[in-house]
Length: 266
Image (tube, rainbow, N blue to C red):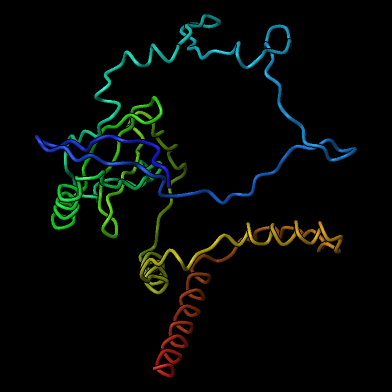
């Protein structure tokens, strides 16, 4: 797999040359826009916003709006004037416990592989992070944007997860209304959570919507009859305590069946 970035991990006086690879991929289905008469793909044309005239790609430059309607063009040479060391370095600023970082800050994960000759310091850093249960809080420039990032070990490989800065995470709206919670309701809700708890196994979950959508697309391509659209049922107001109690009972029965099945299998 071709690396998308090459540079070094820097902490203290230690530098570890690495290459960066995407760790995830989206399998989201993407639709095309078509002309309704003959189903030919529709493209998008670059046009001037003031006149609507077509603009050739060679005549398009990037720019930043510093005031309403006033732009400053930015060329590649301008970006090259920035600190070149910073653009090729993962600078670890601090080490912290992973549990201290709220998942809302995480953006995208990348695998880091050691460059030739850097295997030992790479393994050393991975081992140190593993045995101290720490992550490196770092800054890195990827595609002309400086990211905050967390560096951690995963199955013997270093992973860099880009993060949002504090001022990029919006503050949530407060929940309106005062509600008194009964102790019995809280205890029942906690019991339900405990009954539904288990080890996280990512392979257990899959995108059922994508699978059903693919089946529908294949069926339509073959001219098969498609199922009728399902009407959404209106949500009914239920007795919260009764719903909690019934849910707890169902999870208990399910747990007992699972234990019996496990004993028979063994």
